[in-house]
Image (cartoon, rainbow, N blue to C red):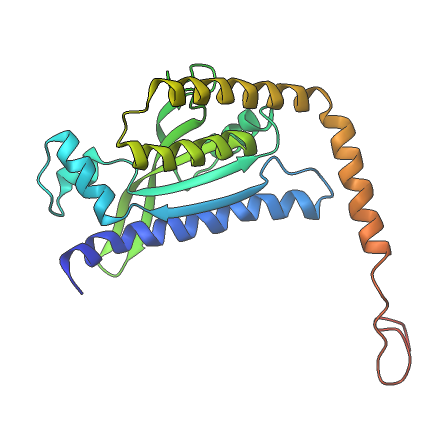
Amino acid sequence: MGQWDRFLQPYKQAVDELKIKLKGIRTQFQRNNETSPIEFVTGRVKPLASIYDKTLSKGLVFEPSERLAHELQDIAGVRVMCQFVDDIPTVLELLRQRHDLKIVEEKDYITNAKPSGYRSYHIVVEYPVATIQGEMIILAEIQIRTLSMNFWASIEHSLNYKYKGVFPSEISERLQSAAEAAFRLDEEMSQIRDEIHEAQAYFTEYKEASKPVVRGESGQDKGENV
């Protein structure tokens, strides 16, 4: 195993564990027949090419080191997607109550959007990873955003690669306009969230009731008392 593989392995473990725990929150809400503030969760370890670009911008040596681990807080990254803007504070409070991670930094890009129009809520956490050499504290970034914010950010990220971070003025203006439109959509959806939740609950119940009955070899319904 190379030096970068060894360096990144705890980050991969941290991402895997955080994804499982955050998905577990969603499952617990569903088992309690409650609407989950978490729609879905994704995660990744920053690719080496992106780490290299970040070291250039920060003036760091491109090699595994404690300084690199301290300066690059998003090597381990997890994204939590929510249906509504109002779900984001709920997710934040759930994370603040946890004892298996420690929030060390918060950046509210929802209230204070970036000039580009980007919106999301970022937190940096210290997360303990158990290794055969002992416990390691890993920095990880958790981004919490709505589905529309995530769609906009994905498009902006792709365009950023195409234009190397320097957008033509027309593209920049259209992105800002789209970001505002996406945020207005989030606000409108929040106004009718109760109706949306009722519709989703009705659809789930209807889907469950419409499932075909599976019969065993004896001709009895599975689960039927004998």
